Amino acid sequence: MEQTKKPEQGRNQMVLGEGNYFSLDCYETQLNNNVLVVGASGCGKTRSVVTPNLLQATGSYIISDPKGVLYRQYGKMLERRGYKVRKLDFTNPADSCRYNFFRYIRTEQDILKTAYMLVYGEDRSTVRSDPYWEQSSVVAASAVISYLMEQGQDQQNLGKFLELIIRMHRAEALEEKVSPIERRFMAAGSFTRRQYAKFRVAPARTRNCTLATILSKVGMYDSEALKQMMNRDETHIGSVGNEKTALFVVVSDTDRSMDRLANLFFTQAMNELCRIADAREGQFRLPVDVRFILDDFATNVVLFDFPRMISSIRSRGISVMLMIQAESQLMNTYGKDGSTIIANCDSYLYMGGNDLETAEQVARRCGLPLERILYMPVGTSWLFRRGQNPRACRNIRLEEYEQNLTHRRKHVRGRSR
Image 1: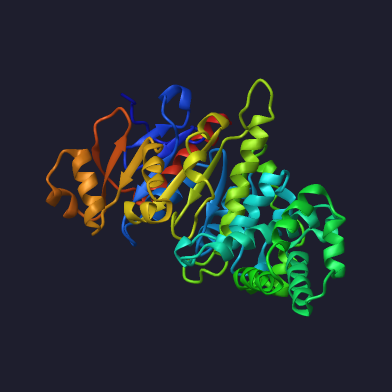
Image 2: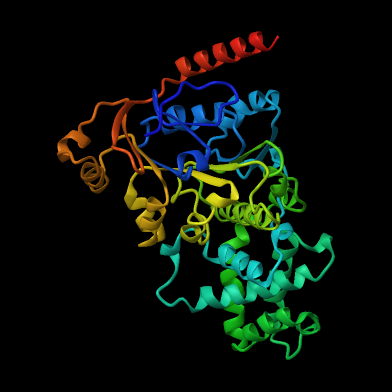
């Protein structure tokens, strides 16, 4: 049984409620650091869980910040504590560091994955009953991405991708037997040629419809501010695992138009950090642990192939803290794999809500009547840690927690003198 400890500056801790502070050393606890936080809107997930863990300033963070509030309130504090702080803002591209997804494409599989995410995005419910158009769009988009990867770096950005799709669409409308663009593709590398040849199998009108489908998915990104933001890369994902960094990702929780690009970033970030960890011979772990704090997970934030990744990130020094409103959100987005995500979170914090299915699952875990869970007092939670009995706890009171943390840090600085 782990002993609860009061938070102290420099301690490697996870904060999950009043009096519930746990070591982040997986070898000590023999648990992973993945946390699933479930609670209705307004129950305090950000103030009582996200913010206290951010204030611990332990390791690096990649944070979903739907309203940009966390960056404004705590960015300067983290800088004072020695962090490199960056903001990737999809709601206001002019006030953002730059991100170029081409910089994190290294293999043919990366090309296919990127094309898939740009076409399908996060919401599979929009896919038509006949998946042909989406599938053929992935093939065409992968040919375009592969072609641009063979060009100079000045050609590898979102603007050039959109430009080439539009030019292909116009060329197909002319119904030329062999267009200048087709000659360029067929003179390219083998993977580009193969993908383009698959696209060319269809009749001209079908190819035109395929390109129109791609434009319907990504045409909304054809703005100068967004293309400027994505023409080079300043996120430096690799450095997040090498030095203490806080990377805030701002994406609107009301306007869903930028979700594809934001989710592409989160997916590339996790894949890149895993790649860097795997390349460290003899260690296979990042020099600095990285925690993904993902608010509105499974609605605003959806990672490609995440159920597989969450099973293997612990050994690489990567963990996730996922905030959802009900377990059904995971099932709606990830299907049966939603259960895999839950099973791979050794800490589960239930903060209350009116979703009956989730309450029933929590009641079964607690061995309590359903009414006890449905009518639990506001400001309290149920905490589950693998290998331990469930425990009821009070939520962190943020103002009090900040005051206590500041007092302890002053005390530590005084003793060090």
